[in-house]
Amino acid sequence: MIVQRYLIREILHSFFAVFSVLLVVTMTIIFVELLAEMSTSVFSSTFIFQLLMLKIIAKLSMLLPVAAYVAILLALSRLYSDSEMVAMWAGGIGPRRINLSIFRFLLAFAAVTSVVSLYLSPEAFAKRDVVWAHAQAQAKISGVLPGRFLEFRDGEMVAYTETLSADKREMENVFAKLTIAGRQNLLVAKRARFSGNEEKTGRYIVLEDGYRYSGSPGSVDYTVYRFAKHSFRIDQERSQTVISKANATRTPDLLNSSSPVYSAELQWRISQPISLLLLGMLAIPLARTLPRQGKYTKLAMGIAIYFLYGNAVGVMQTFIERGEVSTAIGIWPVHLVITLIVASLLYVQSSGHVPKLRRRDRKVQEA
Image 1: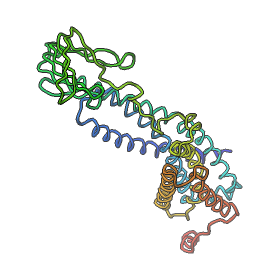
Image 2: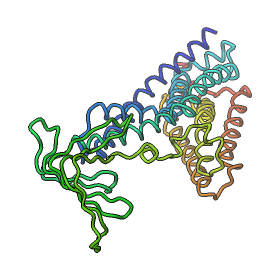
Image 3: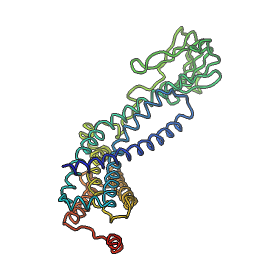
Image 4: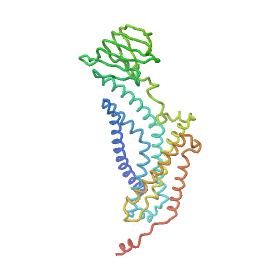
């Protein structure tokens, strides 16, 4: 039991180190992507932080399997290179007991990954879309400058203001063009301001003391209205703001859908804890090295196998989305192949074969 706790502790130390590195790299990449997306507008630090955190949560289901895989690979490789694994075998703790301890450890991580993949990541994707839409709308409002045209609702409304009031809360001498059901509406107002709350009532632009000219281009049939106050909603309504993407769809909704895209997304979510178990168990035979070979000997091979496995799952997911592979077949053949490979390697390792020292190592020990 003491030796098994020592083994798990070594794996956990490696896991936290690998996970920290992956997390920093992921945060850097996401932050650079956010800066590129926000280069044309001004966003508050609160929105940037929210988007950063939500994107990281959405990526956790992919980070956990690779972190656990590399952690087991590094931890066991060190034990092999320092001959500690051979000492465990000599002390009566054979490969089967070690494999069982690691499998139990992986089951706990797979349970956490299941919760993240099936529930937390979709919620993070959905919330990210909402926050991003609100950030864009807020950036447009806060980015109003005199003498510049401002576009709302994907071009449905274009506004221009000549000046801003001293407190910058009102626009003065405003011109706007609004398209409603194919009819052009031109509005001229002395003042305008923004009003409303996006979370509750929506964001509106309120024009005061002006005229509205409504008609169709090329037609003399125009209607002129005079108004004291006229308001238009400038943010997308919630049903339009958040597009129902597969990665942002709740897992129960995926289960109730027959769409190939939703089926592919559901199978991909289920694949994350499965891949964690398979990769973790695959790392056990891959980590097997001869003494003095170094603990990083099999790392390159392990990373290459991970990318092959991940790409195969991604390719099958794409085929399912296109309808080229039946949803009943799905991604499962890839997992089946990896399962057979892992089972074969573990059987060979557990058969009692202990790696022999090379002749050069024997001579060193005898000397």
